[in-house]
Amino acid sequence: MTPARPAVLVADDDTVARDLLVEVLEREGYRVRAASGGSEAIALAEREVFDVALVDLRMPEPDGLAVLARLVALEPAPAVLILTAFAAMDTAIEAIRRGAYDYLSKPFRLDDIKRAVRRTLEVQRLARDNQRYRRELRERFDPDRLVGHSPEIVAIYKLVARVAALDTTVLIQGETGTGKELVARAIHYAGPRADRPFVVIDCAAIPEPLFESELFGHERGAFTGAVVTRRGLLETAQGGTCFLDEISELSGALQAKLLRVLQDRVLRRVGGNDPIPVDVRLVAATNRDLKKRVEDGLFREDLYYRLNGVTVAVPALRERGDDVALLAEHFARKYATAAGKPVEGFAPGTLDALRAYAWPGNVRELEHAVERAVALARSTLLLPEDLPAEVRAETARAPELPPSRMTLEELKRWYVALVLDEAGGNKVRAAELLGIDRRTLYRILEREAGPEE
Image (cartoon, rainbow, N blue to C red; front, side):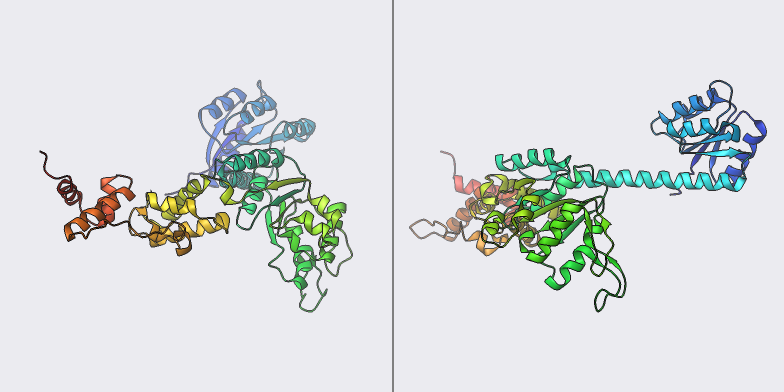
C-alpha cells in the first residue's frame, strides 16, 4: 500500500508568493491546498487534516497570529511555519511562543522553504513515533500489569503509584524470583522519566575487576584493552532510571564510589579526572536483609540510608494466596499465544497441584513451570502430568480403586468418570482428553447409568 502524501496548507494573501509556494511544494510531492486569507485557511484546516501549514503573518483579518491560535487548537494540529517580513520579526518570535514550529523570513529562498518543510515533517514523524513508543511502554509496564489481587500485591500497586511521580531512591526487597525488576520497571514507566532509558545492572553477574568500568565507564588507555573511551551504565541511563539488582553484592570500595555519586550527582570515569554530571533515578534491589548486612559490617550504613528512601517489600508467592492461579492463567495465555497452541486453561487437578506447591523459586519458577506445561500440552487443558515432577509430587497419590476386582468394562467406566471429574464435569473437554468423540462418551456414560426401571 502506497503511503499517503504529506498534506501542506499554504495561507498567503499575496497571489504571486502563494502560487509560487504551491508550485514548488507540489513538485516536492506534497498534497498542497491554498488559502488567500485567514478565514479561508481556518475553514480548510477544520475540514481537512494537514501535516504542515505555511501561514503569512500579515494577512487581512484574521491575521496570522489568529490563524495560528485556531490551527494549534485542532486535533490533530498541523505544525505551523510562519512567513514574515524582517520588519515583523518581533511578532514572529511571539508566534513561536504561541505554538508555531518555526518562521521563515521574506523574501525567502525556495531551497529554504523545501528544507524547512522536510525538517518539520521529520520532526513530526519522530514526535509521533516517540508518543507511540511511550504509550506502548506504559501499557507494557503499567502498574496494572502486575498480576494479582491478594492484599499483599494490592499494597504494592498503591506504593508504586505513590512513589512513581517522586524522584526519591527506592529499595526493593524480596526473595529471588518474586518480581523485583518488574516492580522497578513499573515505577520507572509510570513516572516522569518514562521516555528516558531504564538500565539494568546485575551487581552479582558482573565480575569484580570489570564492575567499576561497567558502572562508571573508562577513558581510552585507562587500562590494558581500553582502546576507546566508553561511557558507563550510569551515563547510559542519563535522564532515566538505573536499576541496581542484587546491590548487596557490591564490594566495599564500589559501595564508597556509588555513595559519592549519589551525594554529588557527578561521576568520574576510570582513568579520567573530569567530573561528569549525572541525572539518574536509582532503584536498588536485594534478596538479602540489607539492614542485617549493615550490622554484620558487610554493607555501608551511610549507603544503606541513602538507598532506603522508600522501601518496597515484595511478598513471596506462597504468601499471595489465590494469586498463584491468576498468575498461572496469565502465563498460560502468554505462552499459548506465543506458541500458537489452543490451550484453554487448567484441569482442576493441575490447579490443585499448583496451589499445593511451595514455589521456592517464586513467580519465576511458576512462569517456567507453566511455560513447560504449555510446550508439552497435548490437549486444550493443561494436565498434572504436564507439570514438573517436583510440582506434581505435592499432590501425587495412587488412584483409589474399588476393593474388588474390576472387569475391563468397569475399569473403562471408572477411568472415564475420573477424567470427567478432572475436566470439571465438562463432557466436551473430557471427550477431548480421552481421545474419543462425544457420542462415544455419552454411550459409555449411559451404560454406566444403566436402564431406567
